[in-house]
Length: 163
Ligand SMILES: CC(C)(COP(=O)(O)OP(=O)(O)OC[C@H]1O[C@@H](n2cnc3c(N)ncnc32)[C@H](O)[C@@H]1OP(=O)(O)O)[C@@H](O)C(=O)NCCC(=O)NCCS
Image 1: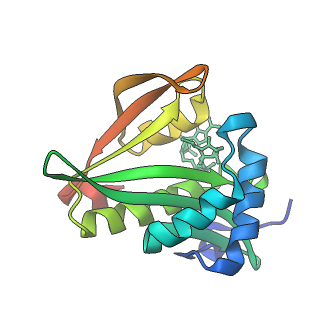
Image 2 (image 1 turned 180 degrees about the horizontal axis):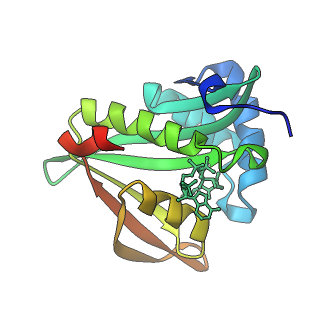
């Protein structure tokens, strides 16, 4: 495994030239219908703007995160659409770096709560989100076809800097 330390990881907004490597990370991270098509990344490149971030190390994209701002019942909400880290680079704090960078951008746009959906069977991701202060607030039956999703929510704002 190429050695990389957290300080060598650059978090930045995605560029068109990154999309192929983003898709490679995706393909190594999800299986079957849970894997986004390449066209989905093109779509979010256009719609998510600077809420589509990548982690770059050694000149390659090794992780990505996509978020959106959504308004529901007059409340501004942050939505984590997806995150994935290259399997060789997990457990090094890179997912945390991406999530914190996205949370800062979402709160700076007025979100006081951030939510996401996660497969109920995806224990590592649930643990990851719990570590970052997200709590399960509901369940969406058959959200991923056969499997269900938890909705996880985090209250953000003044306390965000603690993480
Ligand atoms: C979930 C994911 C993004 C985490 O990224 P990461 O860079 O490996 O996570 P970090 O190193 O920042 O871990 C932060 C904390 O999350 C938790 N965590 C991360 N991976 C974990 C695992 N495999 N099992 C249990 N807890 C885990 C731990 O609490 C960890 O803190 P610690 O290192 O002090 O124990 C990564 O595992 C991944 O890409 N998974 C595949 C794609 C996916 O499932 N995405 C989520 C879809 S909703």
